[in-house]
Length: 335
Image (cartoon, rainbow, N blue to C red; front, side):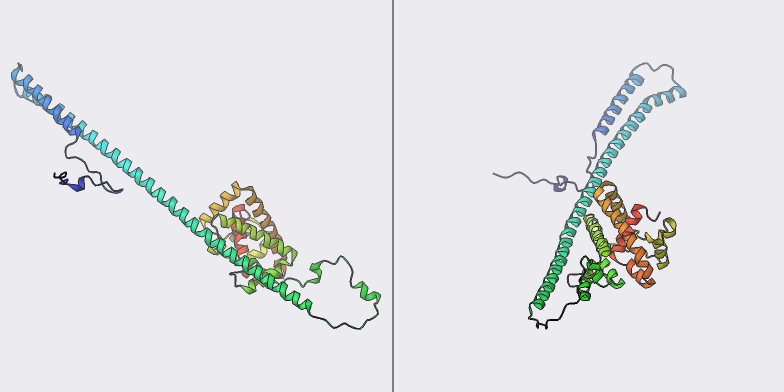
């Protein structure tokens, strides 16, 4: 028993692609209706003007007769052409809408894949930095403990004087006993360690955390950088226009608005839009941003008094300063 005969035109049953033109029959239903109406009208006209009494003849009568015969035929085909064009436009509109929906869906899928790809890398980098910091702290603690464990020679007993006892006054803050934080360490700490192997960066960060005001600013900067990373905004990706040191000094002396507008050098529209939207919708992010801006303003007023122009320029290159430029521009500090 023979099987079904193959289709002589397999391309006819192939599915249409997104950008393929639809296949249309050579004669559509609209054209069939127009042909039928034309033939019907011609038959009626032949019956009326040939077999019936046409009345008086002549040139004018012949012209009127031709118009009466062919004018309805022309109107029929005009209507048929308009209906066919309208159907073609509807089909093209549907195909265009389907293409737009497909492009939008592909864009959303691509954005979701990119966001999913960023999150593991950022989490891995943070885990590496945290592990390195913990390892460094453990090493320091071990080294300190081993030094204390060594037997010390017992000094000869000496009479205690009142002056020696006066040096051990209670209530002395730890900040008064530690050396002041250098501008170099502050700048390096505000930039945060580059990698888990950045020994100098971690050392500067530990020294800065011993200073109370610097520790507050570093903690606030870490909070806003973490919140910004949730929106896919990273300070290393920003390339702001750097302001001159004299503009930074004007800001430290209290200038605001257009005088220090060049400090808001971040031009990345997507970062500005995402930050502005988060600032409006998330009260936690808004409070953290304003707290960070206040601490940075307070720190820089003190930093500027003892920093050189080169040190101010170096501070402007840090990740903390870039976050200040971005959040300050969104908050309207430079307007």
